[in-house]
Structure formats: structure tokens, C-alpha cells
Amino acid sequence: MRSVRLVAVAWSLQLKMRSRSAFDGLLSLLWPAFFATTIFMMFRQGGASGPALLSAAVGSSAMGIWSAVSTTAAFALQMERRQGTLELFVLAPQPFALLLVPLTLSMATIGAYSMVATLLWGRFAFGIHISIADPLGFVVAVVVTVFAIGMLGMLIAISSIRYRSAWALGSAIEMPVWLICGFLVAIDDLPAWVRPLSAVLAPTWGVSAMRAAAAGHSPWADLGRCVLAAAAYGAIATVVSRWMVRSARAHATLALS
Amino acid sequence: MNSLRIFFVGGLTSYRALFNWLTPWILVPTFLLTPLFQIFLFVYIGRTAGVSDDRFFLIGNAVVNAAVPCLFAMGNTIGGERNFGTLPLLIASPARRVPLFLGRALPVILNGFLVAVFALLVGALVLRVDIPPATWGGIAVAIAVCSVSCTGLGLLGAAIALRVRETAVLSNIALGILIVFAGVNVPVDAMPGWMQAVSGWLPMTHGIEAIHALASGRSVGSVGGALLTEVGLGACYALLGLAVLRWLEWESRVRATLDTA
Image (cartoon, rainbow over all chains, first blue to last red; front, side, top):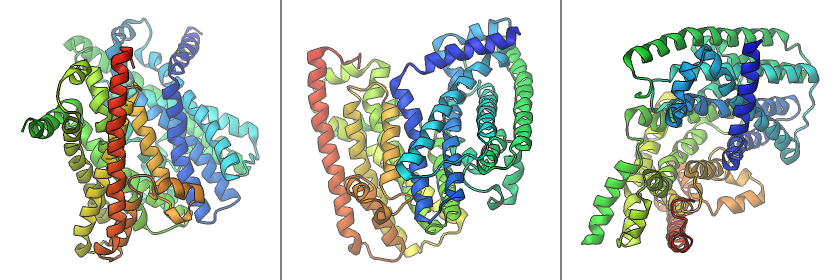
């Protein structure tokens, strides 16, 4: 129960902190909107309509969740280091990985704003009819996808703790994940060697569940895989963070990366 | 002579000092991998949407990536100085502003050019897109022109950075506008009328159009008009940038807001 309270309170505080900059907030809405606009125009140019356009709208809207997490999560610990709060994280009497969950979850939550904005943009600027056949399944799929992307962000944050220019890594993986997780392109259309990679990435299953719920198919099997992948990220992150923190303490390199 | 020294030596020094993307940890993911990933993303989306051919997306997305250094490095001309605490020294210096800021643009233009050429070359090899060898010379000239014109827009961004603290956010917004409006993934003539009107006033639009024509076998002379328009637009943005820089510099002195923007 204490852990749940910790995650809830820290998530709320992190969300407030991240909502302070109007300029950053504007970018988190605009950046995915630029891509969504281009994609809507491409699909319209190709004569897409009905389910194909809805599928593109759902995929484009989910891009914002990943956008909000990829670069920011990779840079999160470097930011804590700069602010002088990384040592406090390490010293806290809770597992280091658990402390990062609300951090990256708040980023994914900001991404959910942009998801709603993109769907509205598609509806009103491009006249895409957003008809969700299974609204409950869709909402659950969005919540689970936000959670899973937050967990993937946590794994990235922990893995890049020793990398001073981690933002560049985070920025570089933004588009590959859009591509290989099937946000807009069917995974079957990608080269065969990419597909195992898609299968271990939680956003693949989250987006697939959202799309299934929108089209009236059952999203639950995909959601199960998504939760499973997120849980695996949590387990890996816990092990990696213990090793990283022990190493940083032993070598006194926490602030020196 | 002093102006020439400021132009060449000052420009190179400030590029190395302010634009700290030259470490391989940043250079490889930002300038080599991201442009390729962007090309692959839009090529596959284009195939899914059933529009155009791979070459169209390859050219548009490779060339627009020249804008990354052009916009971000120029924004850092002011933003980076502020972060390092050296902006007051720069503004207080008696150096002439035109060589001071144009000199900073020169390495950036070269950087943008190399990024786009790399992305186009590697993208063409990986995707097996046929761009005839005879056309590469003209394409290189057009990419250089795009880099110059986009750096003009970057200079305007640098000027605005005297008022706006988040220069990276500003540059990202400018880059996003180029991706949507400059005919990168959707041909300009397939856009609504108001978007076509906007795109005509943006850097990259005419250059990308010229590169498409060159890649399909037309001569450099036949796209001369588009390239001249591109250079003209870049010059207009650069002049506007220098004028805004002068005005905001004066206002920052009057209001004492140089370091608090």
C-alpha cells in the first residue's frame, strides 16, 4: 500500500512540475500534431477512408504518448543529476526503480493529452469520423498503453544513467518505435527480422489493442501481452538499477557521469 | 581585416564552443541515425497510404534534415551564450554584428549540407532508390542552397532567442512547420490553397522541388528559377533576422532583460 501511495503522490507532483512550462506543453501537443497532420494528408492523398483513416488516426494519436516519453525519459536522470537531486533518489529508502515509475508515468500522461488533442484535430480539421466500437475497451487500452510506455521509459532512463548525452539516444529512438511497433504501418509489411523486436516492445500490443477496440474486435489478448511486457520491463529495470546504483556508490561516480 | 577574422575564426570557434553536438555520442544518433529513421518511417507510411514512390519520401526527408543543424545551431548562437553566461560579453563587444552572426552561420551551413547528403546517399543505397550518378552534382548544389536558405531562418530564430528562453522548443516548432508545409511528404500541389500559399514563403520548399526535378533527369538550368527563389528567401530571412536581432538587442539593453528572457 505504501508503494502505491508513493507512486500516486509522486506521479501527481511530477505531473504538476511538468505542466508548469506553457512552452514545453505547447511542444508536447504540437510536435506529434505536425506528424499527425502530415500523415492525415498522406492518407487522404492516397484516397483512404472509413476504417483505414480511423486506424491511421488512432496510430497517429498514440505517437504523442511515445514522443512525450522517449527523449524526456532518456534525459530524466541526467536532469536529476543537474538539479542535484539524484543522490536523494539513491538515498531514499525505496527501490530506485520504483521511484522512477511515477517520473516516467507522468511523462506518458502528458502524452495522453496530446493523444486526445490529435484525435480532436483529426476529427475537426480532417473530418475523420472517430467511431469507437468498444469505448470501454479503448479507454482501458489507452490507460494500459500509457502505463506500459511509462515502464519502457523507466527502463530507458535507468539504462542511460551513465550516458551524459542520453537525450540524443532518446530522440533517435522516437521514430524507430513509431515504425516497428506498428503505430501506422502493419508489422507484416516490415522486414521479417524486425518482427521479433516488435513483439518484445509493449507499445506494439498497446496500439494493437487500441485499434482492435476501435474496430470492435476484442482488445484483451493484446492488453494481456502489453501488461506482461510492461511487467518484464519493471523486473529488468529493478535488477539493472540495483547493479547500476551499487556500481555508482562503489566508484563514487553518481555525480560524475 | 578584423571583420574577416570575426567572420571565419569567430564563426568556427563559436560553432565548436556552443554547438556541442560534435561528440560522437550526439553526432551519430542525431545527424546520422535520426535522418535515416525518418526516411524509413515515411517511406513505409507512404507505401501503406498508397501514395508516391520511395524516391519522393527519400528526397524530402533527407533534405529537410539539413534544417536540424541550421535551426538548432543558430538558435544556440544566442541561447548557448546565455546558458554559458557569455551573452552580455557578446552584446557588449564592439564587433560588427553582420560578420559576427553570419560567420557563425558558415559552419552550420556545411554541417546541414553534409547531414542531408549522407542521408540521401545512404537512404538511396538501403532502399535501392535509383538516382542517376549524373544528377548528383546538381542535387549537391540544390542541397547547399537549401542549407543556406534554412540558415537564414535559423538566424531569425537566433534573434527571437533574445526574447524566448526555450530555443530548442522554438527550433522544433520551426522544423515541424517545414515537415508539414515544405512539400517533404506531401507534394505542394496536393495541399489546400492556403497551405500552398504558406509553403511558397518557406525555405526548403523550392529547393526540395528543384531536387525532385533534378533527380528525374532535368538540368540545373531548368531549376535555376526555383534555386534563385530559395536563395532569395534565405537572404530575406537572414536580413529580417539581423534587423530583429538589432532591435531586440537594443530593447534588451533598455529593459535590462538580456539574461532574464
